[in-house]
Length: 312
Image (cartoon, rainbow, N blue to C red; front, side, top):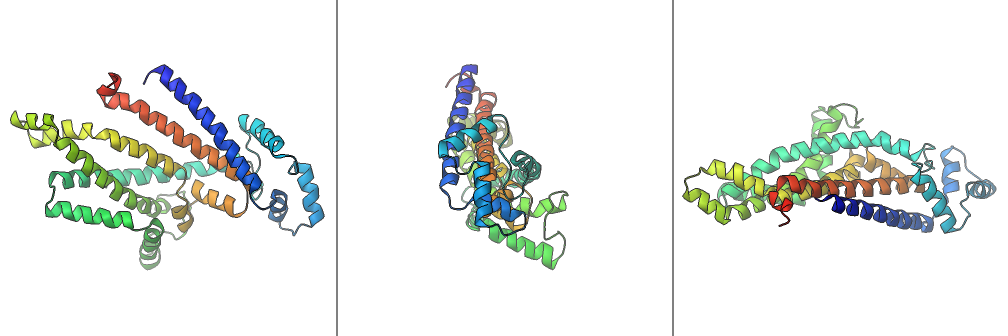
């Protein structure tokens, strides 16, 4: 990817972030509830209407929408997303504290998924329409159909309650608290990626260069691993970029089921407590991660597929 195109994409990211910040702030502004009441209630006392009105005036919650937005935007451009209304801590501090557990969960689930999806997808494609292919396709159909929260609850019932192998509440600090949430996320992803790998491999196996390689006596293993698999990577890398962005955003349902201290559970807590500052900071973080990961994926195309460097 040319430097000029990268700069253009970065400018696009900045423009999109401004748009997202505006509409997120607008939605939180129109949402019911009073941030002043949330702040006072979080202190453990039942606030009076007079106390709510006084704090609203003091914090500027009664100012017009554009005044409040540009005041928040000015602070956000300096890295200050405000203070959480419900937790009384800086939003950036809360997001950073939850980022590493989410990164660990993302990496663990992606590693598990890739370890199963690539071999199963290739096996299914090589043995197309055989009993192996039908079995793999049935398993992946089941994996895609089952919701994550049900898988998580069943794994928790089996390994936490019946066998007592893992803790019921995940702290995010050790590997035991990481395994079940990662496996839960990996099951659905493995099913989806196995089908994608199968489709990509079958498409490449029908190309003319495969027929030519077979005619020259090249072994099936060499054709599969040195030619077919590398050429089928582009659509998989695109999907991986989207999946990583989604996982880094925090898969709220799974994190809530396992009480995992990640970004997803933090976002759910912020929504249920009307913590608008935390919601706005979270949305901007997720948007930035999505767009940066997509940019990195686009740049990686040039190194994976030489045809991209030639502009084809």
